[in-house]
Amino acid sequence: MPPQPPALFAKFLNYRVFDYEGQQIGILNGPGHDCAAVAAVVLDAQGHPYMVIKTGDARIARVLRQDNYLKWGCVAGRMDKQGASASKIALAELTEEVGGEVVANSFQPLGSWMTPTQPYESSECDANFFSLIRLGGTPKGDGGGMEVEGLIGAAFPQVSGRL
Image 1 (cartoon, rainbow, N blue to C red):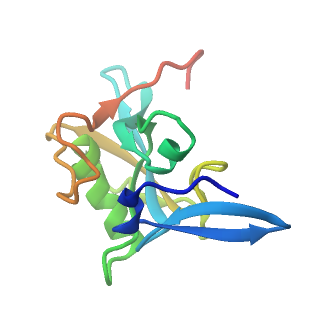
Image 2 (image 1 turned 120 degrees about the vertical axis):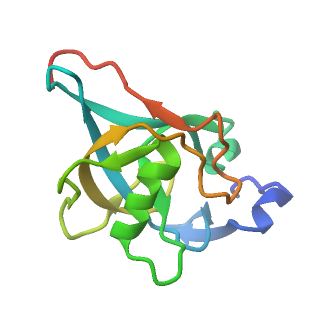
Image 3 (image 1 turned 120 degrees about the horizontal axis):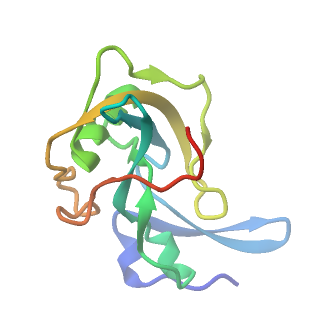
């Protein structure tokens, strides 16, 4: 039997147990279970690209596995806003989570299918986009309580070699 969730999971997110090939699997889900995500890229003064990820990625599912609640994550938002398209949600997340804005007409969809958000962590799927962005604003989140001003922001992971 999967671990039982704390009472915290009885509100916005729900904890449900499913039978999968004879095993009981606990899953967290909520409104807008799937996400819209942006592969955000900034260019330095020499035109070299750098991926932008966000700090303060909060995933309650990690708590059930005794993992860190906050990690780095992708720029993404739950598709829980009634009537909002995936592209509208993705664009809003750029401003809310990293203080970014789209450069020129670079915002483009990456495929026409949903792909796994975080395999082995979540059953969510993403509608994926790409955009060159300019950073300049202060990320403040969406006011929903899962994004904490001061914890969220832009980060640039170190990569070996050139992009």
